[in-house]
Length: 327
Image 1 (cartoon, one colour):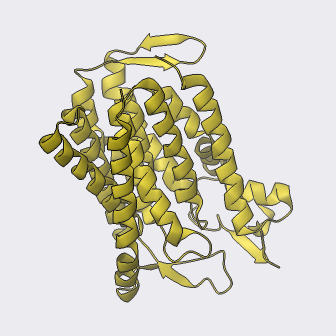
Image 2 (cartoon, helix red, strand yellow):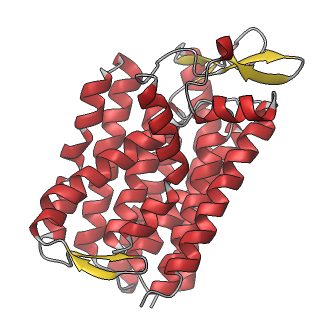
């Protein structure tokens, strides 16, 4: 049973913390020249980077408030599992911070997040190793679930959400749809811990979106992009709805395959701006965003982002239809 007022308190506190923190962080990052080029705008102006720190502050801060509420008012949830999820998210955020500051190699960045999964591995060793597969039912992966699927899930999810990024409002917009979905699924399946993580991330992302929407005043940075995927993995692992999480990252998987075919380009993934519309650079598709540009014959950045949010919404609808009443 999920306590609605309790979850609402987490959502609102996360929303408030991030909303208050972002103007301060934007000023601090800009003053310290911690900025990135907005390559899809005329002149590619510099915009404050590493705004994902505000997302982490809101999400983790609200979950700490939830722990305080349990301590003093007895709200029931599994503290050990929640601490494990929070630790995983924090480790990923540290990795993202390091990458933002020192540009970690792609091969290393693809593997290091496995270490962040250790807290979830530890608590899952004493929990369920079953995964519900659509149209098949539950399957027990046993040893492989704990020591292979959980580390891979955290690593793959965080890297996928870090790759499909770079357009104003895309990461936070798609992430908001993602965590609104996992929040609904948590209510439907009675998972309070999954609801807590989802509400914390949803509140933080919606507040961040206010500053990241076109024209963006701040970028998420790798700290934000990696954290979104890590939090999704933590939520569905704790809630035992891993297959639903796999559905929610379908757009990211499609982007991965296109970029893998192009050997994961680090440049020219953006668009060529002409008359207010983005077109593929050199008429070559290097990622899913550029595929949309090509198929549409040119598209504005706002419409491009809304297209991806809508695509995530379709994945969300599928996940709700399949997992809205699993238990």
